[in-house]
Image (cartoon, rainbow, N blue to C red):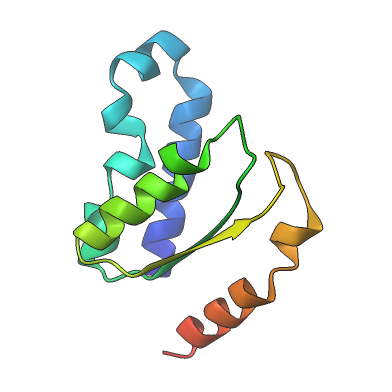
Length: 110
């Protein structure tokens, strides 16, 4: 299951990099991970996402907020940790998130 998810995410990244923007925009639902959660929900993949509340590039309500809403509506398990005052940048508050580490260790043991 983990390998399949990794391949899926790699594919999405390649699609985003290789296709011209007008093509991606015209068929965004096909490429947007938030619109393609069935496989993850079907495989009961638990999620944990970390996002800043001041992100103007990837707004919380349109991304992690929407992801949480749709994932839970489909029966998926998701935790969204919001970092106050953080925007769209590399930050230790994301990469040193003990809750995320604990989540990953707990889920890896199952």
